[in-house]
Image (tube, rainbow, N blue to C red):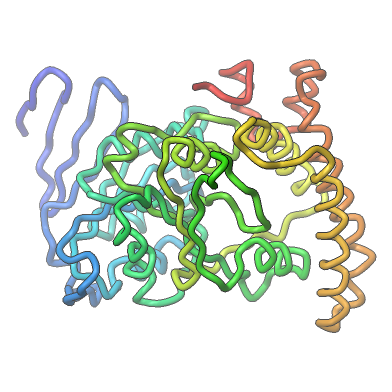
Length: 365
C-alpha cells in the first residue's frame, strides 16, 4: 500500500488492478494495469485508413444491467478498430453488474443513485477520460457488428463535425409502437445537420442527437460540456454546438439495437420529462419550429403508426396503441406545462424524481 498525495487517500495494489479511493469525489475506481484480458476477449488491433491509432473513451452509465453488460463489453473489445479503447463505467447498481464489469479492462466508478444526472454524470466520466473522442452509450444496447465504432467515427473526417450519433434498431421483443417509433426517427439515410443560410436550425423527423449511441470530439466537449437537465440534454448540447458553427452528423451504418417496452404508466412518466425539457430546446429564435407544428406532426405520426401496424399484420395491437399514444401525448402536454404545477405534482408525474430533490428547474446550467 502507498499514499498518492492529499486527494487520493489510499492506493492498494491488488494483482491486475489498482484500487483507488478519492476523498474528494467519494468514489472508488478500478483501473486496469494489464492488457492481457484483451486476448481472452478476442480483441485484435487492425489497421484502418480513416482514424488510425486514435484513443477513444467509452463513457457508460450503468444501473442493474447484469443481463447485458457482459455481452456489451465483449462487443466493445471485439471491435475491428485500430486505435485504443478506454471504457469508463459509472455505476449505480445493486445487482451483479459491478462484479461482471470488473472482469473486463475498465475503469469502474461508483455513483450514488441520487447523484446521477444524464448530463452531469457523463461529464464526470468524460473528465476522467484520456481519449480524443468520447463515445456515449446506453448500457442496455446491443452492438450490431465489429464495424460499429469505426463507422461511428467516420464522419469526423470533416473537421467541422463536433458530434456524431448512430442508428438504432428495435430489439426483437419490441412492441409495434416501439418498432415504429425507432424506425420513424432513425432512418436509413446518413445526414449532416448545420445552420442554414439564414442562420437557423431546421428540424426534421430525424432526431437532433442521441447519447444512446454517439461520439463527441473531446476538445469540443472541453469547450461545451453536456448540460445538466431533467432530460434531452443531448438535444440541447447539439443545439449549442450548431449555434457555435459546428456540424452534427448522423451515421446510419453505425447501428445498435435498443428499445423499451414501456407500460402505459411508464410512457406517461417518461414523456412528461420529455415535454418538460424538449420545448426548452426548440423554443429559440434560431430553431425553425413553427407554432402548431407539434400538433400537426403528432397527427402525421399517429396516422403513419396506424398504417405501419396494419401493414405489418399486427391489427390486434391497434386498440392498445391508441391508449399508448394518448398516454404519451398526455405526458408530453402536462410536462410542457410543468411551470404551472406545484412541486409535489411534478415529482408525482415525472420519471426522474430525484432531479426535483436537488433542483428547482429543468436545467441546471
